[in-house]
Length: 184
Ligand code: IMP
Image (cartoon, rainbow, N blue to C red; front, side, top):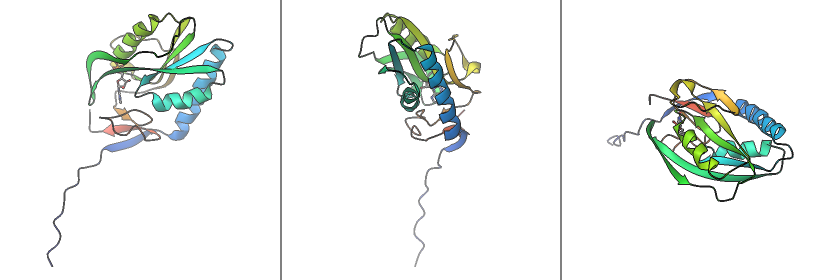
């Protein structure tokens, strides 16, 4: 009997673990404690940036032991692994934050262009204060300077996925942060 024809499967993306679930858990707890310490007794809103921050924000908000509100803004500038440099706002806040203390929660600070644009959008809502939290920062790629109030980890110029971060919408559900080899 002839051997069945072999179908050629696409090569799986090569993801190497970069930050483990345990490392992420410990750091997110510390960030949550810092945010709680800085906002005790204040009306607090955590604003996640869709889509990449959704996993981080889900863990972070449970690490902040204070009453708080959660809202989301949407922004996009990436096609594949390259930034177009043009930031498009896809969703604005749904709840007023005037007089409230806002922490903008982002997955990764890369060129900083998205954050710069979002800080302008959020400032127009007249919060009492506006702070910035990013799980990851890639300082070597910064095109505008965004001082972070809360930073998870500083990383090099690698394209990372998992824990909410994607490559063409894949890998967001990995429980760790991994480096995608062969894309940069
Ligand atoms: P920025 O405007 O260049 O700072 O880009 C911020 C956005 O680009 C992030 O919120 C991510 O959605 C995306 N991004 C930047 N670097 C990476 C990466 O290494 N992996 C996945 N997404 C990334």
